[in-house]
Image 1: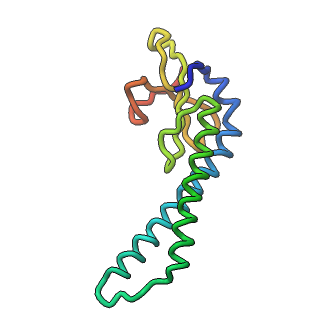
Image 2 (image 1 turned 90 degrees about the horizontal axis):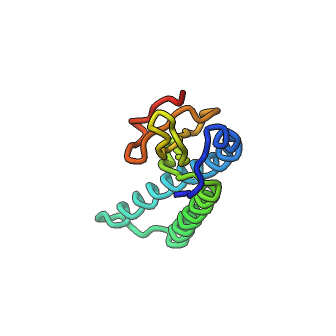
Image 3 (image 1 turned 120 degrees about the vertical axis):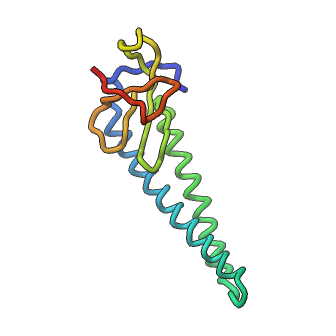
Length: 137
């Protein structure tokens, strides 16, 4: 977690950059899931009786591409972390930033941004998650 504590306005200024980063991370994540599924299907087909031989070079190229997608995703997540955010979910694009909430006696909370939102409007306690997010005043 970042040692820096953010205000909602500070997070809002990061949203254009966050959106661009999450565009990339989420797309690479979708590609990786699809590639994993294809590789799993190929493995099952080859292992089945009479499944035959697969194209080893094609399979190897796809496996290497999957590794590359994993590297690309980790690099984007590192960029988000360098901004001070903690990526919670790549499928929905959830990113938390540590901040204060007056509602909790100025206690440290997570300012919760979700991909597609044009501003951070919610927070949740450090021991809570997305389902417990509450509107900022």
